[in-house]
Length: 286
Length: 297
View 1 (tube, rainbow over the protein chains, first blue to last red):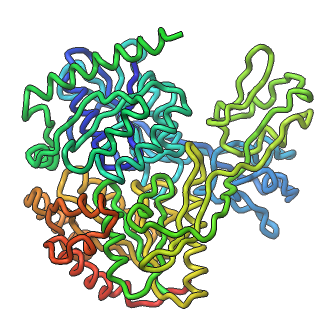
View 2: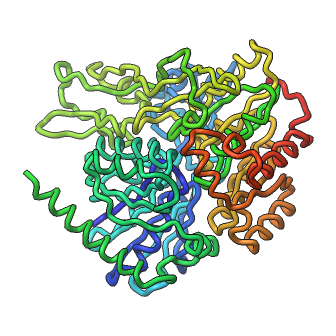
View 3: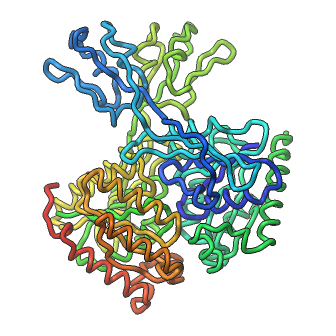
């Protein structure tokens, strides 16, 4: 069972849900932080890191001894990452998408590839014995986010439960994080911004055809429009986390909110069972 | 002309609420919403859309089944697992296609089309505070960085034409491609953070990014009284990193109330502590050295 936790809007509580759900489960779980631009799960789970691995992507290297300046590399590159300038070839690694087009098309074999580091992936174990942990960390200044996310996702536990903390938004990084997961929890807040971005997130998961449900965080803080939307769209509200200064303070320190109440821990356990039922129900639906 | 870009690293710290409030404090400005993935500024600005343009963001490979001989070259070459084979037919998964065109150029049968994709729309609008350029990236589309670059270019062009001296840009969360696209050549960035472990962690990363691209950065703390220890940590970090701390805003339900009324924080209640704090921050930002220098744009 792979559950991703997403939201259109940032700061609605994705990481809170991922950390607290992981810590509430009485079974082995693997938690993956796929918000590789700003990974925060480790601040709440304090994992012991055991391995650290670079995420690399190929970029072109040109052998000017072999190059005949034919410009085929420049013509195939849609990202302006390689250019023939006078009697030399210039590459722009930060624009390169690592598609391999230039090396594949070069008739002289003058373009080969070398590695560029995009970020790192760390793996370890969580605060409880049966918790696996992995996170990606994009190097500051790099833009190629999806390859780092895919590398984090190589640590999915295909036998057990995996929780994926996704980045905000609706574009390629989120798609990379949610792809091939069994269920998406959409975390929102009952405010106009929360609702606007939730609608975008719902469109995204529907397009990807992944079963999904809502968690309304900071319930009571704003208005009721999100409930009306959930009802109208037949979106199950799986959990409400109350708007409570005590919860916000616990979060600010990096504490798990379930440590503040047993009631919340039980609610997270129920959440998991509800999701299992929804996934099965939807899989069994004609 | 000057441009201030509002960033945060972490989402949900109050970038858009603050941008909106600032808009009401500036005598004249051009607004730019560079959070094209999950744009919210329009909810407060109620823009009167005057122009709508398509954003053509790239191309997408489509295999012409009439010409395809099933040789599999495209599948071998594709680095993005976008080509799959089922029932002896090769097809491209649009979600995975990077738009690199390698399969298109190297197909021995020229059997792959490469149509342009409309990835979203961008708008030129009028608001009660001045003109606004904003956009909507299509669901699950790529090239958000290019759309950010485009809305900023358009905002600049129109500001120049209309002799507007200040552009205020609401930025996206994170530190990846749309964020990098939102800060290039800006006069300064204002990082909105909050006194939480995540807020601090993410502020550091976006601060490093600004330093990497040599853009002057300032920081303000929203909900500063939520955790005073963390607020002191932010003050310390800002000092170490040479980022000017331009003010702090108390935890105030007025942020949400204003949003529900589609008003800025200041319009909603100009006497609230939060409104006063926002005003002080605005004056401090505008008086900062970075915002005094004319940058060639």
